[in-house]
Length: 71
Image 1 (cartoon, rainbow, N blue to C red):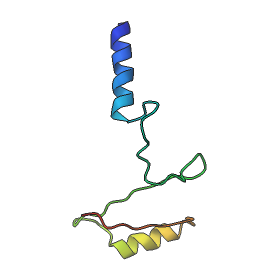
Image 2 (image 1 turned 90 degrees about the vertical axis):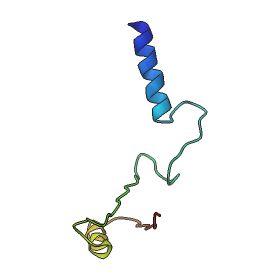
Image 3 (image 1 turned 60 degrees about the vertical axis):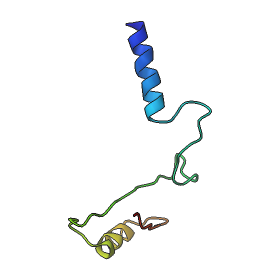
Image 4 (image 1 turned 180 degrees about the vertical axis):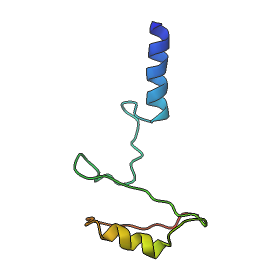
């Protein structure tokens, strides 16, 4: 039982890349306990266009909106 618990904990740390000393893969290093990052991907089957979605997001009073084209 003890080995299984340790194995699960180590697997969790490896999958989430949170082992102490590992470089963080944070998309924005400014994220802390009072800021966060949300990633929204649009597909061809999306219900909203990029412009409609941007308008809805801006209505929430966000601080910053950064758009990136993913290939």
